[in-house]
Image (cartoon, rainbow, N blue to C red; front, side):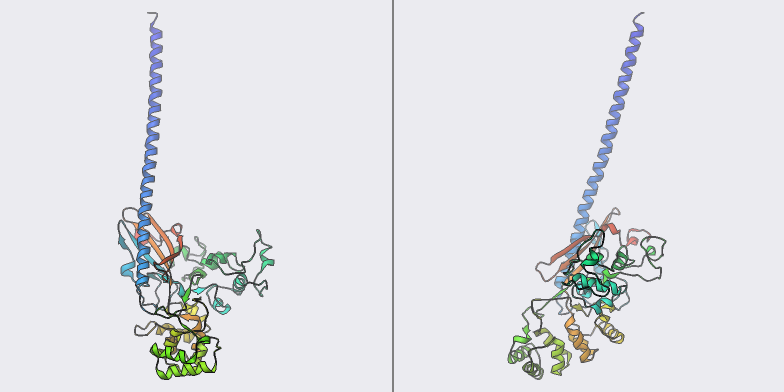
Length: 444
């Protein structure tokens, strides 16, 4: 009987050890289960990312094919790449849907949101804009305009409300002005007089729609004035990527006015379809002077204002050097504010907006403006506009079918290259899904 207490203690020790082992095994099992769940979740997330990237790539390829297939000599509000809700809104691709959003200022048809891609020539080139063109932008100030001009010019001469090295050197931290062209629109945030509110406006999620949270004053972010109208900010009006080829519509070289003999000009115009009388008038204009300020001056000097004939002149002849014409505005697609920046009167701008919405209007050349402008007015704007677009912004959104995962990107493409070249790729996913109702959600 003396051994019973010892046996009891042994059994107790064994029980404790077994309990500890069970606890350890249970803890290990729970840890393994948790790790397995994490690994499964990560695997699902990685698979979703691959699917979303595939959907986005498919949408971008679709946009590239659309702009590449466009063969019309002029780009307008009727171009198929620009507005096609049936094909670009909620496209079924594999395991999800994609949208090509086109949020842009109203070009005159009263619509807020379209589905397609936006041409960069419908925006104002920040590196080519004049003071008058910048002042016509909504929400901008004289201080901001002078700051922009001082930032991009090469000198250290400060404008009245601008800024040069003396000002930027006093900031904390100090930095130097660019004294060169802008590389991006976001670079404006370094310019005196420009802040985030001016640049981005109220459209915090960049969907081109006035959402409730963007029209409630101080009720929620972002700040807004609760006036029932969307302040888009400068970003929807500006670009640094717009450039037109200084070539004919068929891709051949134009004839330089200053170094081409009058007879050669006449022959080229006639071969392109100009009447003998018009070709002769241009040849005589060339004989009188080989030095002109622009194509508008040639049109005025010739005294010939038939839009069809002038269109041939604009296609065949150039007064500019180089193969690229940066900063020309597409007069067929740009918003009202950019037309006002060309120093036209409001009634002239209204006439342009109305005329370009007519399906039977030939919009292939800027010469169509002679249908609504006087020759002198036409001459002041023709060297600053185009009807061709070659760079486009693709705003693509992808959403999975079986769960609310999405991806959103902004891609800049140039169709002058074969294949179409991607110039910029930006992830906009952190801004949120731009069309909440498509996921069964309420607008914020």
